[in-house]
Image (cartoon, rainbow, N blue to C red):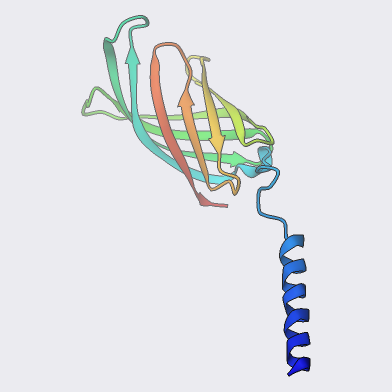
Amino acid sequence: MKRAGLWAIGIGMLCIVGILTVRSGYSDGPKCSVKTLKGTYLVSGIQYMVTPGTPTVELYIAVAARTIYNGDGTSTNFARFTINGGGFQIDSTSPGIYTVDADCKGTETHIDPNTGEHHQYVTIVSADGNEAHVVGIDPGVVLAFAARRVER
């Protein structure tokens, strides 16, 4: 009987010491970098072009896109979109650059190859890199969408 009690106390102490030495996941927060975004991501959403300073919507744009992030701060975006529900579609391919900080927040810029315009975005990336949530910050543009990784 005494021996069984000593064994139980010993096993209990080992369990307590084991629990105290285990670190919890993300105890210091997630760690991200440009390498976190790597692979092919699919996106779809609605974008509104508004008159700055007014609530007037000028254009409704439906977008489906595929973005390839290279894991080095560069990307390529392939987009297909329609304007105001028109019966036509526009295809666009644009190069991009992006940043991802250690806290998984970042920025993204795509350059329109036809006009040379830069389109700016802010992002929040999941720590595993499987999702990026993107908000457009260009004046007169209302845009928010989630990009989901489909290939590494």
